[in-house]
Length: 137
Image (tube, rainbow, N blue to C red):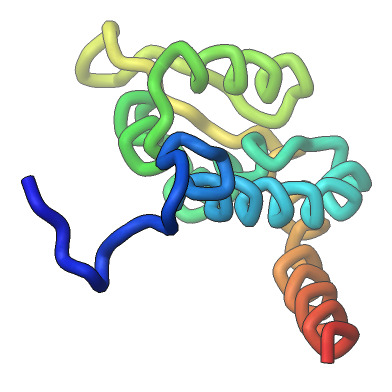
């Protein structure tokens, strides 16, 4: 397989971390999650829990399989996350009405209350990023 001159890594070891396209993306994703952390700590939830709640606030009663597909999370990651939300009293997992093998997710009143508190988070994040961009000038 040949590569075109416009699509080549810098000279040197192709396995150096700084030569990986994935690492800057990974670092950027981690920076975003770190920026969310103080905002979500006030709500006593993690970034992953926030993502689950964003989906359930739009579609309460979604089944676990569909939630996993939407968030691109496997059941090994999603199940413990949902158990923690359930232990906090934010989400209830119930057997499906048409198929008992299916688990459906429903927000509790605490989950709906949290939605009201979370409404400020997107704007606060935007302000954080705008502020950082202005500071970089």
